[in-house]
Structure formats: C-alpha cells, structure tokens
Length: 610
Image (cartoon, rainbow, N blue to C red; front, side):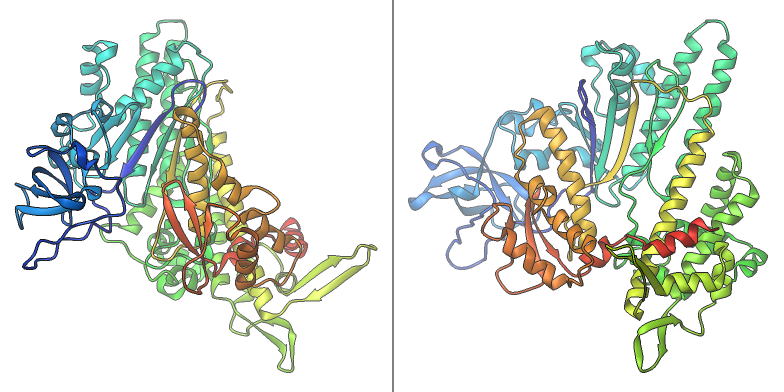
C-alpha cells in the first residue's frame, strides 16, 4: 500500500458525522449543571479571558462554538452559545472544552491548512461541506469521503475534470476529489522521480460508506486516462494498441461485475500509462459468511441472484427452490434488499461472464456448485444406531444422490468421507475414525467454505487469463477496497480478522506518516502467545478445546501482562483489545468453529478423485 512514493488513501465515512454516543446534555435544573467529559483534554483555564471563543460539547451536533462570559471557581466556565437551541448560557468544566482558532470557521478543502486542528473543527468543517454537497475533503494526501446517498449532478464528469486540471498549475491541481487521487497515482507511476515505483489506492470504510462506488469511479478515471495516453502516442501499431487497450478496459469493467457477486478485487495497471493488462487478487474473502451470515446480513449476492434469475427449467434441473428454504441464506434474517433487483443483477452477471469467455457449460457447472452448497447447508446428520452416538450418517431426508451429482462425485463416497476421518499414527498405522454428528456438521461447513473459496479462486484465474497480453511490469496502480475498522453491537471472530487487517494497514500508514507502536499487532499475531497463534494451536493439536476454555487461555496469557489486553468488569464470554481506533469488546463464542477451515484428508481425496 505505501511504497517508496507517497501513498494515496481514500477513507470513506458514513453521511452522519456524529458518533453513536454524544456528550451528555446539561440537565435543566434551577441551578446550572457543569458539563464534563472524559474524551477530551480540555483547555487551560488560566489562558481563558472574557470574550475568548471555545468549542463546547453539544448533545445534538457534537460541538458548538461559544464565547466565555465568566471564569468561575474550580475551573468552571460560563459560556454563551449563540447557536444552541436550548439554553444560550451554559456552564462547562474547562476540561470539557477545546481550543478555538479563527481558521476553524473556514471551509478548508484541505483541513491540513487548519491551525490547532482537533476533533471539534474537523467534524464541523466536514459537516458544513457535506451540507453544500462538497463530499470530498483532503487532509494532505488522504481524501475523506462522505457518502451523500444521492446523485450529485456532474460530480463524476471525467472530461470536465480533466479539462479543468489542464488549466491549472501542478501546485493548484489538488481539488478534493476521487479523480485527484487517481490522477496523482497515475502521474507518479508514469512521470514520477522513480518510474518503477508502484502506486496504491486504499479505499477503506464501513459497510455502506460507498467504497465500491468509489473504486468504480477510480477505475473509470484510470481507464480514460490510459486511453488518452494511447491516443496521444503516434507510434507504429497505434490502432492495434488502442484496440487491445479497449478490450482490456472492457475486461476490467466486466470483471468488476462478476466480483461484486462473488467477492472483492484488486486491479493492477502498468507503468507506461497504457492499460496493457489487468490482474485481480483477492484478500479477506469472508468464508464464514457462506455458512453463518451475521444477523441482518445476507450471504454472498450470487446465491440470491441465481435463485431469482434462473428460468423455471434451470431451477427444476438443479432442484432449487426459494431462498427462504435454505439455512445458509436465512440464518442472517435478511433475504431481500430494498432497491435491489436480484433477477436483473443475475442477468447482468451472465452477460458479463459471456463476454469474459465463460461458456454456458462452465457457467452451468458453477451454478451446480452453488446449488450443492445450498443443499449441503440444509443437510443434517443422525446416529447410525440410536444407542451408538459415536458414528453418524446423513439424515434420510437429505438429497444425497442429487448433491453428489452436482459435485461430480459418488454418493457413497461423499457420505463416507463426510462422516469418517482417516488418521495416520506416528508409527505409520492408519486409523479410520467415525465422526459424531457434531463433528460431521463441522466437516460439512468446512467443506462448503473450501469449495466456495476454490470456486472463487477459479473465477479470478479465468478472468486474469482473458487478459492474455498482460505485461508483468515492475510498477502498477493497486486499488484495494477493504472494510474499515469495525465495532459492532456483538464483535466476534470476523470483526477480529477485519480489525487485525486494519491494524496492519494502519501500521503501513503510520510508517508513511508517523511512527507506529507495535504492541497491538504483537498481541494479535506474534507467536507463540498471540491471539491468533493460540487459536491456531488448539486446532492444529486437535484439542477438544471449547470457546470458553480458549478465553481462559487468553486471560491467563495476557490479562494484566499486556497493555492492549483487558476483560470486562463483570464475568462474561468477552475479552477486550485496545486497538488504535479504540477499545473493542470481542465475544469468544464461535471463535474455534469459525477459524477451523481445515479439511481432513478424506474430503480432500474425495475432491481429487473427481
């Protein structure tokens, strides 16, 4: 992300700039109530004079500007707040206020130009700009983006932006916009001091912040910029180069359509200013979502699109029914999305796959795998004999023959491999162990996650192969669309993985801008006692460790021994990690199951034998 040249990062935010918890409002009593807060450092009361302007906390808009009217005893200040809808005169502790500078009232396009910048003026200027549809704001070479959840006319007029940019000097080029980020990366790759220096654009933000849309607009701008570079070159073979360029540009846009259904992507461009190839790499494919979507969230879109878009004959051939009949699609309690037409999206997906060279037969095989995953999700296991619960088999109602047909394996082999496990002892002896119903259920989930992951890898490999003229350049522009830091009402293994990835990105960013302390990353990843290594150890050693026992191991290893680790005040199934963005409480329930993606060799042999 952050190479030898300056990095370019786009961080998205939701349209509401207010935090979930605002400072408490002053209670209306016969006497003034002093407002206090533990989230700010305050101002030095000795520097305050009557008429001084300060930032004071406000329960509705977070911060407002006020004027000191009196400095009372014990660090208490009487402040006149002209824009307050309630009492204009309020009393605050000096520790609850923040310093004011006249530059705070200027709508800076780059907030780095602001003096004494802190939380209050940052939130204020972003809010003021958002209200006038100025959704982009720079802070040096970082772009803050606020999703407007509406269309802003001419905001993404590439031709107009390029024309305006040509009329400006380089020092004036920095208009806060996604295109400025894309143009800076493109120029540095082609014309920078070190032409072999790769460029990266990181698009980070929470769900719904507009990351995918931002990535699309960046890719479109780079496509236009590279096409113009082709057109400006008058060498021999220009027409052929342009034709190739247009073909690969189409591949980029079509691949993005496919990846929106199956996952996210990273797009590469070469250093010469022409889009001479594209390579897609994926990171953080959330395989847990396949078997256990979070509450109020859907599984991957392709499942719903397939069920909505296949015709009646195709649905009958695959023996598929409505999405509310499948456990993997209903466990998140969310099937449809307002304003989303899954059938239309599926039509677009098939069109994109057709143009990318996926034959009808190949597409049918992909849909067969998806159908098999849905049917396996509904499959359950029962004991072979009521008195013997140490061995299991598929329940009688499971359509075993159809699942095996969809996967291209024998039904007997599928059941045997799913319900037994072969282990080789240290002396070379081979043991065939029967699995309990719970163990087979875990094996089934791991199997579904594995085959979906392999299918996703296959899709990426095929789409990369469509760019046969790809030039392996030393330099590229990488676009990474990634979840930002997550703090949910209940945080589990998925949030730990996402926040760990963001800690790593923050480390790279801080190396670029500041100096990072390593403690939190070591807590999560450093062997042998990090959070992740301890979790992996329980699985590799095949210990029958419960989530609660794992929590006890975490507490024994890190509690009161690591500054970034804590536990809640009251007894619970939670632990706390003190991240750079704040403290996050993680629920240990499900950690071992969600991290256990390993397939035993019997199931691997089943797939190899196809």
